[in-house]
Amino acid sequence: MGKAMVDPVTLAVIQAGLQQVCDEMDLTFSRAAFSPVIAEADDRSDGIYAAGDGALIAQGSKGLPVFVGVMQFSTRTLVERIAAGETAAPEPGDIYIVNDPYLGGTHLMDVRFVMPFWRQGRLWCWLSNTGHWPDTGGMVPGGFSASAISAEQEGLRLPPVKLFKKGVMDAEIWAIIRSNIRVSEQRIGDVKAQASALMVGAERLAALLDRYGDAVVEEAIARMRDLAARQMRAMIGLIPEGRYQARACLDSDGVVNAPLTIALAVTRQGDGLVFDFAGSSPPCMGPMNSVRATTLSSVYLAMRHIFPDVLISAGAFEPLEVVGIEGTFLDAHYPRPVSGCAAEVSQRIAEAVFAALVQAIPDRVTAAPAGTSGNFGLGGTDPETGAGYVMYQISGGGYGGFRGGDGIANGCSTIGISKAPPVEIMEQKFPVLYRRYALHEGSGGAGEWRGGFGLDYEIELLRGEARASFVMDHGRVGPQGALGGGEGAVNRVEICRGGEVLVPEHLSKAQDIALAPGDRVRVRTPGGGGYGDPARRDPAAVAEDVRLERYTAEEAARLWR
Image 1 (cartoon, rainbow, N blue to C red):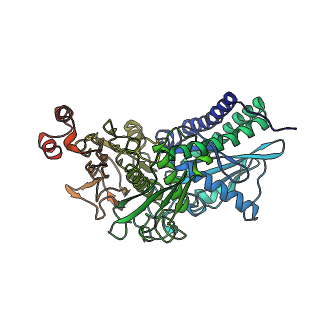
Image 2: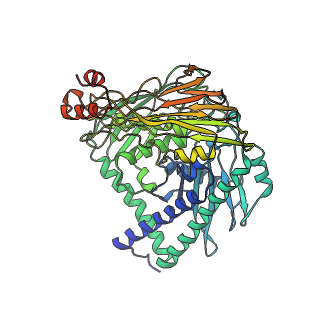
């Protein structure tokens, strides 16, 4: 039998159909999940991965970009471990669970499920998803320990094991997980949602294959991978040949109060790009190390921001080579702590990519965005209900200005489409009151096109005692401007206890801060960097910002003098 031929129209339809399968998995996951961070904030992603090497086939349009590459690596690791006999071989109805950062992951709170998909007795592909669990144990509620110095202090670490065997959840493995995490009785809702999403994906994918035939869909997938690679190479062709250098800094690692540096040189070589991180800081003591999978995925997502029209497929990553991370904090190995890698370090990596390539293709790259997920964990027991809780707050920030426009205010983080959970939901589920929820006025960096504004919120603990932890960034320096633009405002964290205001020693990182009823936490997230010479900004735009009280007249005069 000859090879099936896929015409362009059929290829487009199958491409959209595969993405729709992933979109429906995303929707199922969010609608069925218990935790607000998944159900409301959409901190999750679903995808389809190749049977042989785990290569990305398709991902939902509403999934977190940082998970695009990461799930590819974790699925590949699972395939390799099965081949080596280190993990049990798959059978129909099995679902593996894994959150080990060193096996192609991120941090421990990002828990991945992987399910084999079978056709006529043959393993056809893998369906995988990732959901951010509110807690996986460790030193502090929520898992974002700012001062962990080893992986064991961050929480329960799971290698790939079968949580579901032939469709039935393994009660013993679930008991082990429950005995190691906080508010464990609530996690079953997220587990069932995560598994249900994969089952919906299997049903929809089977229908797609039944309609077009396995051979036609397989050829379409191969064509999509080739097309994605050709599209990325065509986009790279827009970059003038040369070497473009940039740097980005993190406030500290949470333990040693000194900045960490990401050094990057991007070189166009023919139709490929080489990202060289040689010269970046060495492995750090605290939890701001990044595992290899997250580092590579951060480069991939940055390129997705710059060239969003390139097809989402493993082929899009083929022209991108990452080197020079060995011996740096961007290639963490056990037992280095990594809780900040996916949420914070990844965004500094993306910022470095933006800062390098804005020099080469200024029409396509923005100034730096806020670049922090604003991870704020609060844990305690509500005396009104007697139940324990773990609250996880993420927050947006300003986007960078770009040629032709100002940055978006209070946009989602660089790594994903996750949005802050609604205030009403948080107040309903946890013993807190939001005293303030507004834009961080004046935080956008000056430029011909200014940066967007961050978020300014304040939370009061209403009852009981609680412990607060923060793993954020950009408290030391603001997001960098581009082509003469100014920095966005820094991240600011303040804790008001007994009438006194505490600013964390590490500015954006702290853990185990005891709170009593009436104590408050205020966070002002960064604004985006400005783009272009501030002196070139339209005076009418400056006047309008002052009229709307986005800046005071004095601030405007200083920034746009």
